[in-house]
Length: 329
Image (cartoon, one colour):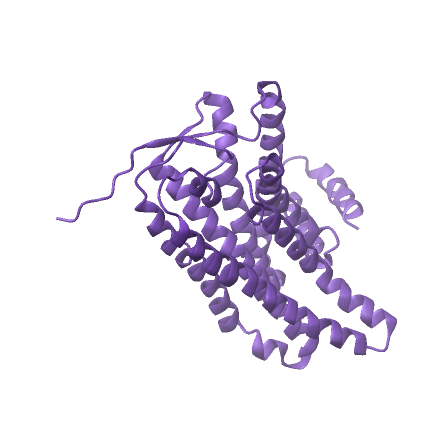
């Protein structure tokens, strides 16, 4: 019978964002506000993509998948902060810690891959506009999304398998607000050279640098084609269609690089991780929706439909619809 490797510790203690108890209340309500806003924004975006046929295009399907990733990532990483404050218990079992590390690594990879697929979609839309519907058809869109999710879940398994063989840790206190691979490697008593090499080769090269390079190449061709457009209005419109995606890409890569390329787990690194897991998922639906005419039109249609179906205040429903139309113009 195969023996399952056992670890000397069966649980860890999550230190959290700060050790100062005076800031616990402030941090709790701040994280709670960010988390609820993130869920509301991404859920609204996802439901609109699902139920509005005008948004059944490759770009919005990718954004719908990105909303799912953002909601899951926020839930997985921020629930430690919220539950720790409510229950006053910052412990986490070894199995839960490994599961959290696996899910966060998978979701991070999926987000990078989805953004890479979106850059390809923008490349086809701008550089091959006449062939766009032939290239980015329903089958291609489904295959790209499935590939992003599948590879995201698979790429974390090798380092996690090595981690499971580790037998001891120098401390059970994790200097972070969730279970992540870098702080856990620093606590391990085992030889982590193989894991560090695999983490660098797989997570940074395959999951980090490769999507970044593919996205960069896509934008090289995009910018080159935009510069060929003679009219100023045409150039502005082309840049406008890519500005939201490019903003999200820069935000995510900047926070990830500052989070994982730091030589020590200082407070600045934890702040980068907090920005990556809390602020970026919060900002994504705002960046993609605030100046997006299609999204605003879909949101307006659903609000008007809701008020029209409402049986209450029949005489006031027209006034409410008129107010909604004014606010969304």
